[in-house]
Image (cartoon, rainbow, N blue to C red; front, side, top):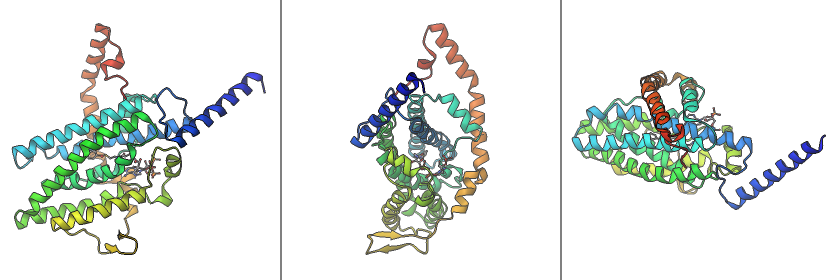
Length: 328
Ligand code: BYC
């Protein structure tokens, strides 16, 4: 081996050692710091999947903006859907700090190479579904994202701080819709129960496969990207949500659900992992519809993106600042 190669190998080992020391000491990794290629790839995968989920997640709720039952509910829903676009933006910006451009990541979504959360492949059939999404889907998202505020990668962890604050408002608005329906007529209570029946199991699937089948958890936790395992967060979500359903007078659609006094938690029935696999394979009720909607938005927006870049070049601004910059 040539001296130069030996020196390069020594430098890599030293970088790797320093990186591990930082991770173990809870010191954040920042964009210009050295990081292993695998760590960078793992972050780009998770952050881009998260960003795509925020953007695709606008679709099922936006379906009800024109049919919200009151002006106040319409304003709140508009603000919520707009917040989700903002979350997508912070996350794409966090991915940009790792060298992955928003365009590149969007093309991966449109080609089916990148994933987004399974939950958004289910339809919103009634106004109660908007309540169930806020209560359960945003509730599950908060459970998953609060620990991510301590993620070892600085820009991702910091993006989570604001996202979690907004998700908390989203969760409360969803619960408030469910509360209003549950305090309403028999028909309204039935709508609320029907929405819970359809969203409960998909919400539990949001946390990902069981720990023993989770491909990335072990490495992601060793790197401080994930702080808790899929099953741990799922259990916390069930324990938190069951009393809320009881307060609403709704029944969780699970015959096996039972409080376990010894363990201090709810035991719950088996999750249909075949359904989860089918949704991930692109065969959920709305997979094709969701990607078609994003593709249309991408194509319809081409003139605007081109115009922005032309204006940036004419005005001497950089492409990066025209597109929002590489924020943290
Ligand atoms: N859906 O090894 P695993 C929101 C994939 S949006 C689809 O356990 P990991 C909101 C996984 O990617 C909330 N795919 O993975 C927006 C992997 O496949 P690949 C979105 C899933 O990464 C609008 C394979 O299964 N939140 O809040 O360790 C309105 C094996 O899984 C899912 C986030 O994205 C799934 N549910 O753990 C309202 C949070 N689960 O990539 C609300 C950030 C797993 O090897 N993400 N897969 O092809 C995470 O915390 C983690 O990525 C996960 C999965 C817990 C989701």
